[in-house]
Length: 395
Image (cartoon, rainbow, N blue to C red):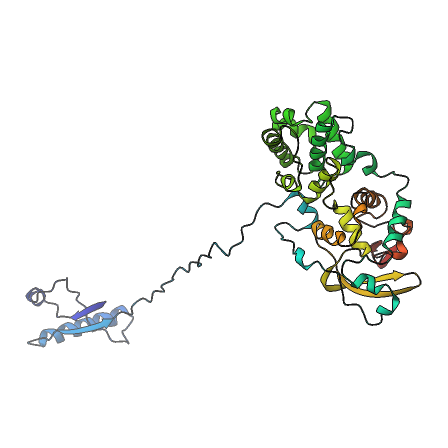
């Protein structure tokens, strides 16, 4: 854009004689060292006026000054390229069972569940390495460990012995008891046994432990009766949905296959196997909950390939170290445990280890000093230390 600075004499005749499409700006070129005082400015003005008047034909001098164009930055919106829908994984809401193991939206790689084969040099000569390293064979001393746990559990003083899912609706007819077992297994997830037992008792007292009664009941009433079980709001919604499905598809009874049970809202693998074992007396797999998952990993009974962790495995008077990686989910534990555990132990292993985990092999600070199989446990006394200022102390 150009600005035209015209130096014209102070005469209106000249400016009117020259046609311009825009009004003229009269400006006299001023020297750079223009005086700043009023008196000097008046003298300079008089001298310029007399000079212009003395010129017969004053010339019009046009000064062209270019203004620097403003630089504008053009910011282009960078829109992310849309990913193809075929390669994008769609996440779903995590199941209630996933919260305890921090594995929400995680897909278990069950194909990698293989017994370890790499053992530290020199361990093969102990005679126990071959049992751990070969596929499908049980770990060392598992029968001694199992019998020792049975002896510690002989008193049956754990909550699971009197308030577990196996005891739900035990006095009801067969059809109603099956539905009671299904509801009890649904409520037991992320909930202690005595809380689940109390909720089942309140449902029985109010006549709401059948598919017909639950389908007609208000969801707010169900929430009030089952509170304070974990995730009681979601479980109340799922109970209504399950009741409606059981009425429409199974005549008020529950599904009799593992696949149909897993299709019910809120029912995971642990619950499905438990219902098949108890309600239908049809064993399809081991029921693995948080206690079974934790204890099997502490004992070194389950493992994955790609070893990253070192544990010591004791065999009578000798010991050696093996490398293996723990299973990360109960479903991985179930698959790994079923590779070697005899099928006749698949049903009793759940209440046995659940009660053991409730009384001795607890999640926090296990009572290893009271455990009768600590000599065979690679994790013994490794989680029983309380951190204090200046050191640690064993319980």
